[in-house]
Each structure stands twice: as structure tokens, then as C-alpha cells.
Image (cartoon, rainbow, N blue to C red):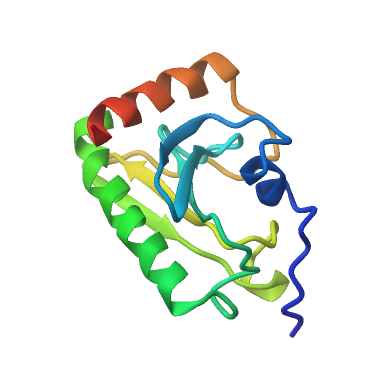
Length: 141
């Protein structure tokens, strides 16, 4: 298994401000952005600001910060979207389903009777992402 961090991955570029993103929440250690290929309404991603390929190489302190932010966002899903529940996902290495090699945690608001959309690689409408960003922000303040 490789643990080499590629500082040219898309999340590293977002963290450096080289690529725009819909920013939901930010503190000193983490950034929450909208997933541009959401599998459900409000699907967002929690990222550590420090370089970490995945859970196998992240520092304990950075993992604790990601966990705190993930819990904060998950708790806000009901207020932001009227969610009935929440799915939290985190993948490690290609065999584990990881595609972007900067640790990230998926937070997906869930609704009774509504299945997750398949991952098609199709990007969401930017206006929809912006509207969902505002819902998250209002719920997290």
C-alpha cells in the first residue's frame, strides 16, 4: 500500500485557493465543501487542512479535528435539510474505494424512502450547490 501524498490532488488545490469550491464551513483545522457530484441533497465533504492521503497516515490530532467537524455537520443535517438521518462515508486506497487521495469524509443527509443516487461522474448544477451551501451555513451558525 502506498502512502505517498500528492500535493496536486484536487482537494489540495482547493485548500490552496487554486480551484474554487462551495465552502460550507471552515475553522483552523478543517474545511467543509459541497461535493460537486452529490449522491444526495446536501452531500458535502469534510477535509483536513493539513496534507493527509487518508486515515492510514493522518495525524491523531488532525483526525480528531475532522471527526469533530464531521459530527458538527452531521448534527446540522436535520436543521439544514429536514433530514431523517445521515450517512457518513470515508474511503482508503483504491481497493477501499478512494478516488481522491486527500482524506475526506462524506456527509450525506438522508431521507426515509430515498435511495442514494449512483456515482455517475456527472456534476451538479452550480446554483443548486450554492443554495445547499447556504442551507448548511444557516444551520451551522
